[in-house]
Length: 135
Image (tube, rainbow, N blue to C red; front, side):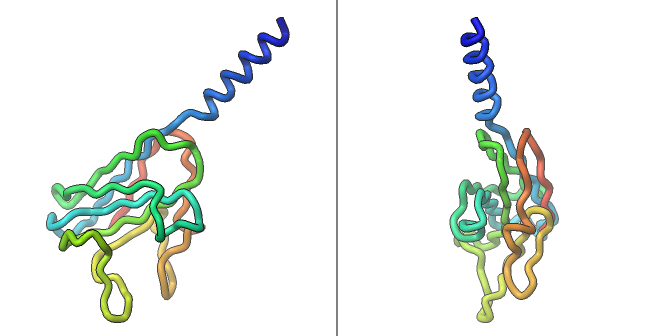
């Protein structure tokens, strides 16, 4: 009987730890409704701003965008987003390599003489959550 209770308890614990969550990202401060907003979700420091874990592009309505990432395992994440005004699928930069389109990161992380760090942008996602980012 004790073995059965132990097995059931372990099974329930494994279900709870494997529970997936939903992340809603609201982006505001967009200067116009032209183009799309790209939102990238990252799950490690090594891939931050290089390879997204998941990404979504969305049309802009009333200078705002809301995107949803479903079925995410609980853990640490960071977000980067940019306003792709000309719909070319990339963050445009000037000759000096400085972005010419508006961009932002989670936690309002800012870089000094470069992009923000994963450490500054990361957040812990353990339950359904909403993040607000202003460009």
